[in-house]
Image (cartoon, rainbow, N blue to C red; front, side, top):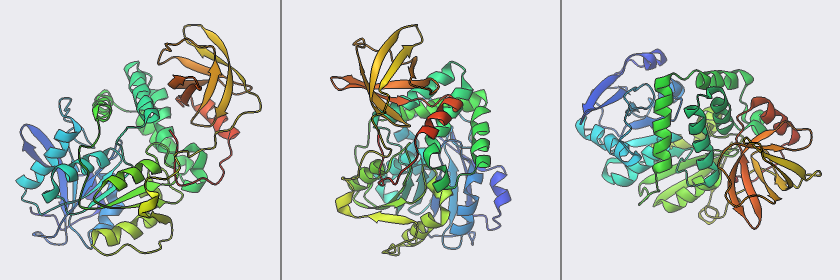
Length: 409
């Protein structure tokens, strides 16, 4: 590997280097303080809606201690090659083939959101090629609520309802109940919403294929055994802290930390709190016993975090009406209600359609909902949050209280 030594943030927008492996094109940029560098490189793998430019601050900081490689696999980031036939495991194997072709030493992958699944699979499937592993925003997608939200997003895209899809995706990435704590500005929120709303047909297809890969993923046959650091945003509802902790518990040598006042984009919202942990970790130094902005979880906590992140209350007015797009109406009683979902009871048909539901409750705008479980305890559901005005009205109904470092389905 020959590294570039002239790094500047503007270069991240320049055309990448490209290598071809078995017909698949891999885009990358590689930087170091020396052209020939035998140290373990940090490999940056981003999530949906991220490009090399998203990592400008990280590259600038990491280059003082490590070579840095940014990689876009087919259908990732700026790599426009579609790859519908490749599953997550095969994409992870492409990372190993990339390392072999360029004769790289053992890598230190940093996987964020969608990239976390690829990084973790690479580490588990190719342990000799992975020295250390850093993950944030674990996307194993075993939680029913997350899977149904992802399926709803795909259905909206299929129907051409890009605006509603964008609103639901934004609510998943940026928890509206904690915008003040996470420091997400209205300008950034609007910019991200516009970015999602303006996806081209090719970008929509790439998102669809990537989402289908996640939905088809049946779970890890084995977990990484190398030193691993897992970072979870305190208010991340999309990939929840307890899921991060469970993943860490299954790894051979994992530490897990909850980043305060952050949600799914913890790496970008709380850069210094994250850096205070990943800097020593990547340099093979002990993590600080105490670190401002985060809480390290001890082994006994990993499988015992609370799985409910939001208050679910019994509303004063329990009467509500459940409506379906085909015209049916049912009088129901709300036993639990929160911003992200709830539970209701009513004389409902046994076989409920998966889509087309709305909840009318009090003076709130009608809320689009997605059924999860229908049993003797009633109907558990999540809100789709595809209507901006309805979501805003619901958010104003709930005032965040101090929450445990965990989340709910």
